Image 1 (tube, rainbow, N blue to C red):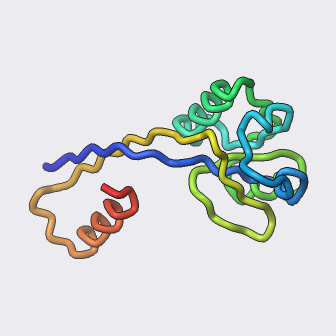
Image 2 (cartoon, rainbow, N blue to C red):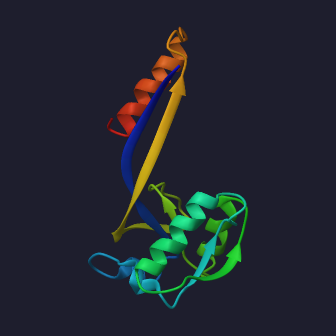
Image 3 (cartoon, rainbow, N blue to C red):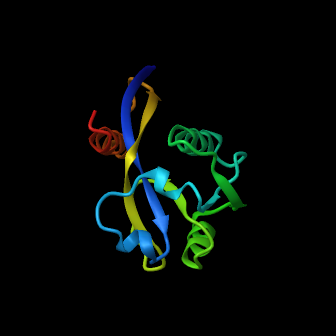
Amino acid sequence: MINRNMHSSYTLCLLLTHHDFVLKEGPISLADLADESLVITPRVIGPGFYDVITKTCLQAGFSPNITVETHDLQTVISFVSLGMSFSLKAGNTQTAEVAFRELVDTTVPLDIAVAYRRDEKSEVFHSFLDMFFDYYSI
């Protein structure tokens, strides 16, 4: 068995409707959103990500005003597109419904561990590992 631990980081991406923050020039800080409503997936679905979001908001100087918890990203995007709230996610995947903006002050550490059999022969698996290590620049 081989176990590889890796350390990386990612920047949280802001999901919001096409309004002031999209038009605002320059970087957006999470603190700029302190008075806004947040939509997020429930802690039972993704406790690690939920905790990162709440901790990051607290580090930005505010307790998040979580108004909606929903179980899937498409519903999160729907709530945001209706102007009801903003949300945060890892990475930047564009959709027509909402705007994605990178936040300037939200680099989040990410610890990843991969365990696999030393004698694994699958080409698909080794292709996955290559892609995985390239993606995380390891």
